[in-house]
Length: 92
Image (cartoon, rainbow, N blue to C red; front, side, top):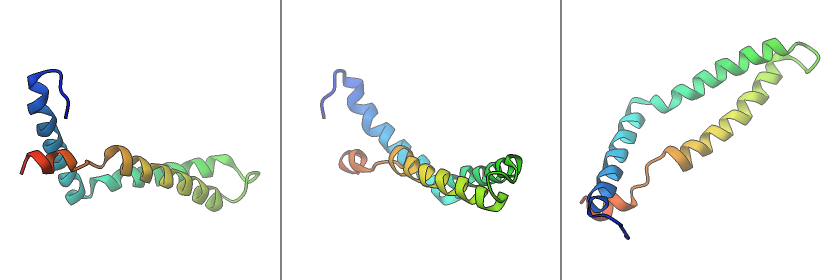
């Protein structure tokens, strides 16, 4: 690990540890499911507003939910999920 300041040497493992603990709490309380539920409600409302010209509201809602769920899954997987590499080496 390359650092420019001495404080980085302490803060990087500490922030990794705290981020992992926060993500553990989010996983245990299942709070990561809340954006998916809100997205489904929004997709149903959007499908009802579109009208019959684009297709039935159920099919439109399903298409919106499918696309948004895949995108949200990858965002959670690559951007939100804490990486444990640094903390496992230095925090114990």
